[in-house]
Image 1 (cartoon, rainbow, N blue to C red):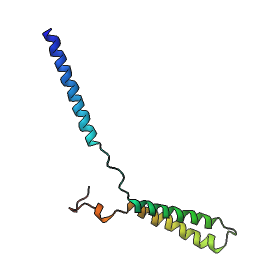
Image 2: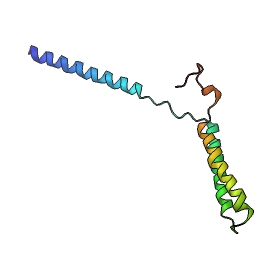
Image 3: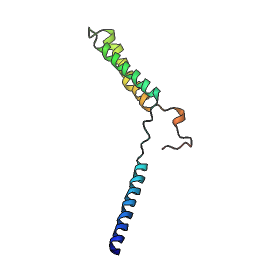
Image 4: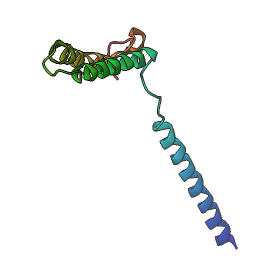
Length: 103
């Protein structure tokens, strides 16, 4: 009888220890969310519009006109290489760490 009580107490302690470990793991894995603000989404939408207008200009006949040869590549390069990367990398000044160290 005494042995059974000791085993039950040991099992209860192991269960509590497992619960404590689970809680500590969950607190370590807490996800804060995306660092993007509304301005990031507006810039991303603007980049998508540039790209869509670029492809629209590229599709205009005849193939050797000003829109297809000049305007379309400019719109596509600005959309893909300027606006979309800026939308991804932009952070407000208040989002930077105050001590000057990353992370």
